Image (cartoon, rainbow, N blue to C red):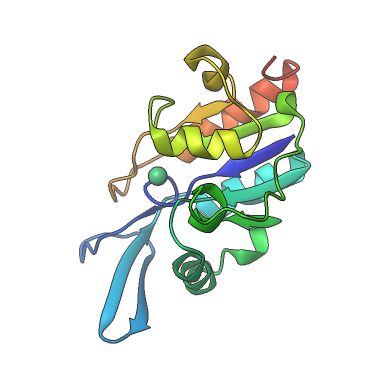
Length: 173
Ligand SMILES: [Mg+2]
């Protein structure tokens, strides 16, 4: 199975909370532009666990390639992902390579804070070859609530349970 994690508000919250006990990171891009992030609890543990049970672990984000690469480097998350797909891959305006469209449909799950009515989700799904009704899209989505920086967030552990149970039950189709 191929599993694609979203980035913003699925794995990180773009904010700074000085009282947070969680991992907070600052990223500078030059020109005085800085972003601060809180890493969602259990991110590293869940990505490591997913990696052991899936064929491919990808990041799929509608953010830009430059920002995504920089954030992954600062967070130390690059090693978890076999491939990273960004806005340049998903947006038809940028898209040219089309190098990820041949994955078997029954073997694909996306973990994302948006639901299937979102055009961003639909664009990502389409890129991976999944199109059709909401019912069909939902089969390929592991929904997680938006991460808001809370210390007690356990959503990724629940997502891991969901992924494991779908694998155990012959998955989505
Ligand atoms: Mg998101």
